Structures are given as C-alpha cells and as structure tokens.
Amino acid sequence: MGWWQIGTDSLAGSRFVVSPLAETVAALKTLDQATAAHPGERSWLAAHLPAYRERLAAEPLDALLVRAALGPTWNADFLTPTPLGEREQSFEEEVVAVRETEPADAVPQLEVAVGGPVPEPLRSARDLPHRMAGVLAWVWRETVLPDWPRRRRVLEADVVARTARLARDGWAAALDEMCPGKMRWLGDGRLQVNPRAYPPRWVDGGRLLFVPVTPSQGWVSWEGSERYAVVYACSGALADAAGPVVPEALGALLGGARAGVLVRLGSPKSTSQLVALTGQGLGSVGRHLKVLLDAGLVRKGRAGRSVLYEWTEAGAVLVRAGRP
Image (cartoon, rainbow, N blue to C red; front, side, top):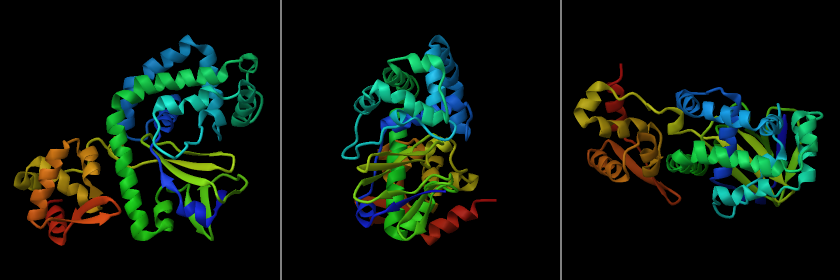
C-alpha cells in the first residue's frame, strides 16, 4: 500500500482547498473513462461526452496526449500540479502551472504515467504542456464552468461537513471516511493514501492539502517537499440529484420544500450545504430552518465558524414515522 509518514506540524497545519483545476482534471478523467458512477454523472456525460470525443477526433495528437497523461495507475505530474493552498485560485491562475511545464520534462513524465515508451508523435512534439493546458481549458469552459457555482457550493459544503467531523471525532474518523477503501489512518503518523504498493513518503514540514472534487475521481500529488495534496471525491448534490425521498405524509404536513430540508438533517449540515443539496435559495432555506427550530424539530450548534443544524429527537421521530 502507498502511505505517507506525516509530521505533527504538517498534520496540524493541513487545510482543505477548493481547486477549479482539480475539478477540471477530475472531469477530464470522467470524460475519458466514459463511465458514470451515479445518475448525476450519467446525465453530465450524456450532455458532454459527444462534444469531448469530437474535440479529440479533431486533434489526434491531443487524444494521444490525454491517453498517455491519464496512465493506468498514475497521472503525468504536469497534468496534476499541487495547489498552492495559500488562497483559492481561479482556473486561469492554476492552469499556468500546466502550460509552463518545461517541454523537456513532459515526455519523461508521460513515460512514468504509461509505464513505458510513449508513441512517437508525442516524443517528437515540443508543445505538449501547452496542448494539455488547451485540453483542460476546453473541459473547463465547456463542461465545468457552466455549472461551477453549484459545484463550488457542493465542494464548500463538503469542506464544512468534514471540518465539523474532524473537530468532533478527530483525524482518524475524518480521514477514514474521506476515501473509503483507499485511504485510512494507520496510526503513529501514518496515512494510507491508496492501496497500491508505492514506496512511503515523509511529509514533515510541508503543507498538507485536502482537495475535494465532485466527480468520482481521486489522486495524490506533491511538489518537492513543500506541498502534498490528496484529491478526493466529495459527497454532495451531484451524486444524487433527487436527494432523499420525502415521505408523502411529511410533505403534506410541512410542505414539500420544508420537508426536503428536514429529511436531510439526519447528520449535521450548514445552511450553505442545504442550499447546495436542495437547490433552494438561501432565503428560503433560512426561513424553513427558522420554522423547524421554532417547532423544536431541529437544533443548531457551532463548529468553528459554521453553524450546523440537525434533528432533535422529535424531528428524528417525525421523519422516521413517515417512512414505510
């Protein structure tokens, strides 16, 4: 298994980062695999896969480049630069790291990704980083940007939920559920980052970043000994556009929209999470929460700078009583 030995300072100074470029790379991987992990991805693929294939068919060298960069077990390093982590950057700021990769470094990194020689057209090309940046810019512009506000809300909601879990239950619980079956806390400062037989790495003094993405993709990256990133698939609205079923009797009692807020509070959630998950406006969600609070069906508590809502005992009984 691949694992990192994480120093106390790096763990204490770790942070969550929203990265438009990571979201775009995850979207590219999903398009290339053409396999949906859930109904939300299936709808997104149906809308964008034909244009993606048409784009690569028009640029055969780009098609070869994408296949090589998305190797069978490893991504080419220049495709997945590690975020800076100091502040959220725009896609245009982040993709500069891809575009400005030294052309001479691109082919060796592709060889690592594919586990052997790359096709001749790629070995002879002198503009591979620029081409890859162009592919990513297309994926961002055509498939991610139109839905970015919603995606960003989902990502931010995931960060709030995981930060609350970390504060409540500690690192082991927070990390074990981040990438189920792949990542887990082993104890003694050791974090398993994937199940593959990679050599261990020492993360001591560098910045440790956790980067959520909405597609069902994930990877790790690092920049020397300065920054290390774990990119993981978040949980949120894109995975289940329909959301939990609102019991008919509960919807009749509270109204469908308010009941839709209530049924999602089996685990603590913030107002921004509920906005992302329900698709309702901030004002509407706020009004529903006030009514539910006044009725004693939910309670609120603070986790860091976020206010989280969850069922009271009465709220849990009401929701469960309406289920078959």
